[in-house]
Image 1 (cartoon, protein in one colour):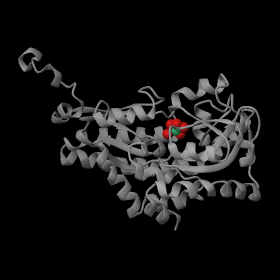
Image 2 (tube, rainbow, N blue to C red; image 1 turned 60 degrees about the horizontal axis):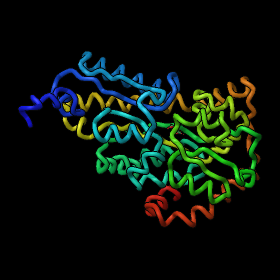
Image 3 (cartoon, rainbow, N blue to C red; image 1 turned 180 degrees about the horizontal axis):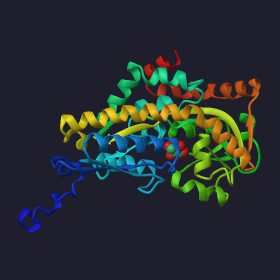
Image 4 (tube, rainbow, N blue to C red; image 1 turned 180 degrees about the vertical axis):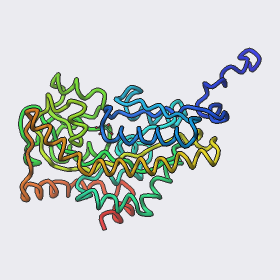
Length: 324
Ligand code: EAX
């Protein structure tokens, strides 16, 4: 068979291994985020730094906007080395590594600073390192941000208002379980399908950080927004393990250092973007509603039955450590 194949299957086609042997190579980095969004500005910086510091040997080709598919597909492609990098929502990634499910618990972080404390701690490092068991090297925590509601038919203020509402969620079991526990009808689907589903009335609403809701144009059909901040969504910057391990120590360092700078840039851009985009949504004719303290408390309390039901189903030690 080797003779019949002429060994042609290794001529650059077999994931990272062959590519990594040579001096010059291209890293394909797929994501679902729109061009120009803060994450993609961070990924562009990463591409620039890697290219510059390797004297042009390493190219990073970023494929935004779901060009290479949905997040689950791209995680699998990265595991297999069909692409080298991706940066999915932690929720979608938790399907591959259960210990990450603790981030899918609603209202677990009050603000980004608290989230950073956990992500940047030993616990956070341990979680990133654990992804090696799934064929992935995590280069750092990116950030999607706090997720808010965007509805088609009218404003939602309380958990009660969600009864019977078809809400598009990510394909994340814990998110689905929470929305179901408050009486909503969660409808999981990959990101690339959401816009059409909103337009066609397959779902009544969607939840995502303001920036993504706006750049993906979900706020056109779903223009009744509520700042629920129900889930803080860190994304994880991933590189294929087989690919990365085939690289020289020098190249690994170039990539890791550039990833650190990318993460810092994403965090700094994220610190103001939510308010900026919120203003743009309103200027475009959307309605954005803030919760009163009482309403916010109702939302937090609405998650208690969910915690009671699900705390023992995840890595309880980590959940407890985060809550503490
Ligand atoms: O990670 O699918 C989603 O709603 C995510 O927020 C998006 O894919 C970015």
